[in-house]
Image (cartoon, rainbow, N blue to C red; front, top):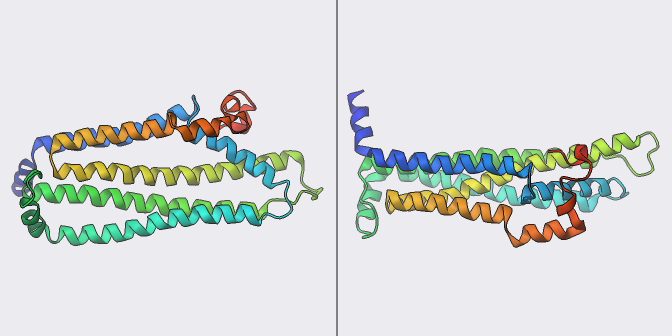
Length: 253
């Protein structure tokens, strides 16, 4: 117990304050983005409308090969990041076993903080935790895109008279919902990658780490709510004006 307290003291209270600010930025922004997506146009809310329109039109097509290919293409992108996480985790585990060598190597760099071993281990463990979280998030996203593939395969054909209009409507809504949940997991994983870049600045110094965390949060906000891509997505079929004014049940997230 005494040894543990000594190591915590050696890590320094400033490092724990920085870590708290970092986690507040990450978790706080994730909750803020989810909250705002229900009240204003964002990449998340606008794309959800486009996904519903995609599923509604998919039900009108006899051949769904193109739709299945689109899902498979997105799933490949997610798989790339999941595979990258495995490689990064392996590298970080190796680094944790060689912290003394890394400490000596960083000591030759003039602009680094000159960490003690416990401080260096803390930073590497935070990075490891981020990429473990990312791995689970990306793999869950892959599974959900697999569920979406099943729903596309199970979608009724346009000439199937045994399926009611309400059944088709619910198929479109909930197929889009599954894709939306898969995309949300994918976004969460990507967001973790962004914030891992902020953690790298921690090796330079705690105040740089705080600034990088705030910068990453600002970049994410700009891309989610103010980007040119969002403007284009809103203008496609005038979705930006319909997202919260049309059928509330249809577009409810």
